[in-house]
Image (cartoon, rainbow, N blue to C red; front, side, top):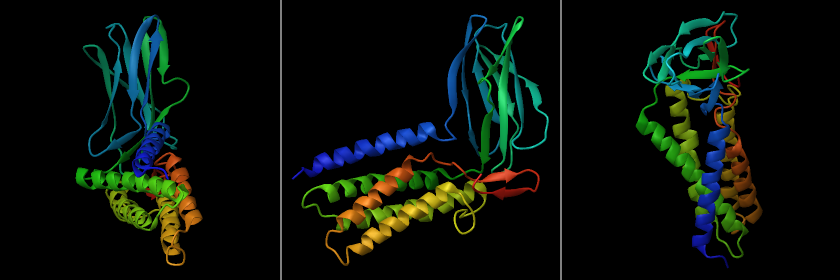
Length: 271
């Protein structure tokens, strides 16, 4: 029989790896990199999510004082022309600001750098899309993240327990379901309300992928928990629920989320 401590460590490794992958591949992960303009190296970090009030700061590290920059942006999916604003120099950096948008509003933007007769576009051929959201109280957001990660950790641990010979999954399944309910089905909608003005934008009210992912995972674990009433060790139900949650967790967070339609002024989901 595999020692429990080994299963806990393995569950932690899988959870941390999945979380890192989801963060790195999600549409809110900043775009970072370096580029050269006539032999001069510049570094950038372009944000794709803005929470709270105020404009979004855009910073380019360009030590050479002869490098100039301009920030180009417009409302996402709108017929607007790009607004162009010169970036200000502060020491080794060029700084510009994206105008604040309403909840779920998006801007697409890019930076143009000029050095003598040369110019480059950052981040290249594509524009960067940033979404604005309301202020989520740190305590609410922290608890939401804590419970969601705990649910993923417990789900993985429960699945490993089900695979192990003689494993007992009843109470682990109960705790997994409880943490998923608290983090995803209770605190998730609260965070959504603060950020985008609606508690729930998944089925049957919309196609928000994050809400629907959470709903599917929760239903799967409720079924796995219920199966314990008829079978002391519903091995395959538990394994299936754990695999489904892992697959769901690997889908980048915030994809097909809330988005402001500038033409109608409505916030739509599944965009």
